Length: 368
Image 1: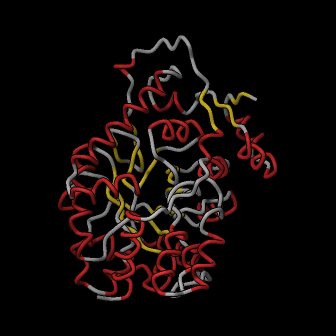
Image 2: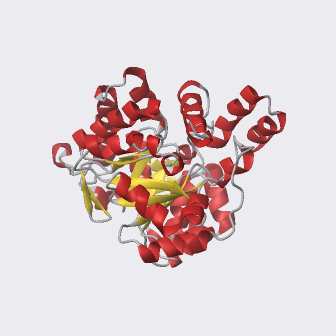
């Protein structure tokens, strides 16, 4: 077993068993304005959406989280079975371990086997894209017959890991080369620290097809490193995890607004603290095209190694979204994107300081 594979299973167990979610809920600062007379038949509300040319029954992706270790094979299969059953998308975890050892490929290939018609994206970190180049990206795409590839940015986590790759120089050039060379859509995704306007504009300029904002507000992979550091007796790693793991980053709400402000619109995935259909509704009203979540589905998949509870939870989230749309008088997701919002508290203060509150006011009917 290579070091990457060992780390993957350690991180997975920590996320499933330990407290790795930040306390702050950025969505509490966002309120949808209630429409007392919605003039909508709830039974006719349409949740279908298009993303990168693919159709989704619900505006949801099971976020990339696992693979690269024998114990993850069944978990990935369970998640993929749920995606296939419900017409939603799915991403796999970083495929670095499979590039380092072909024996780990099956833990990723099982996803396409279990979800032959679903939208599936491959996944590789920016430092590994720089290391393996276009050939490596093509290999991870082929491995799972992926419909797109995500290049993830997890430099907060890398900075805390003792074995982390902290050479971020040249990553933008590597992303540009991938965008120019491959035919599949390229998604750049953060992994829990959020995406600013400047970085969104930067990656759009090199040709990415979509952005996953991966905002602060849900699972903190940096906080997960605290538990690994404790187990290894790494006092410095534990200290860094505590200092940066719990409150460093740009929230999901702020990230959606900043990424949506770039001059030429680009499809956005909202990830980070998406725990219910109301958060999905708020994200879409703010400007996201669809949402993704990992930890809620991971825990359910690991509990019984069955897709039943994952399917049940996604259906519940869809019903929660339907209720939010009904109570705002929205017949479809296009109308939800125009729904009236109120933004308050710390989130509004940060948006005002960074100059984005007025932009979002101009873009939609924002109550003040």
